[in-house]
Image (cartoon, rainbow, N blue to C red; front, side, top):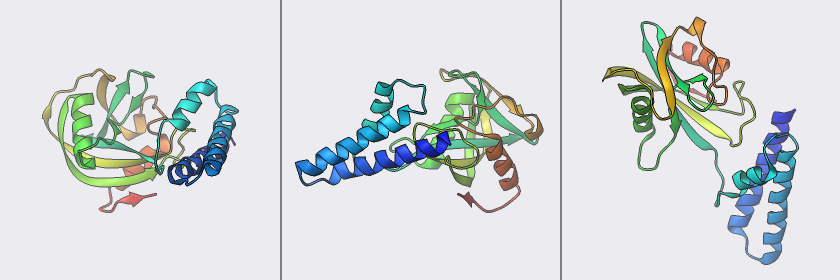
Length: 203
């Protein structure tokens, strides 16, 4: 139920933000501003975050709103998958992060893997594009699309970074505690399935 309410609040916020971008008169500006504030109030009813923090998230962007893009790298060695332990919550995730301006998605996958794990990789293929409103993700502050790339190791050594504590390879049947804001057990089941196919999963 909380996730459904947050989805409604985010959709209201998106409509208000788009309206504020295209408005032609002050009357419409007032209505869309009020609609955006209602989205903040609705989200605050199901969140532990302070209302001003929610307001900052909901009002910091401008223009037509679209989902944010998160890019993750799947690196397999000896049938095990590479994970990195996040400093922010001490839990594990696929290496990756937000898409960067002036980088292609595959370039981001390579860059993030090196920065977070110390391994040099090359992109082999796009495994999946997934929607975080599906696949068992908890309620998130933004709506994300995740692009999952399969990569192969070409050099480097495992190490931590300013964002990660350590990196290791794990079997799919022995995954550590996951950072579910970034990846879920359902997502790993999908990845495991996709590794055996030559098609890209999009949902």
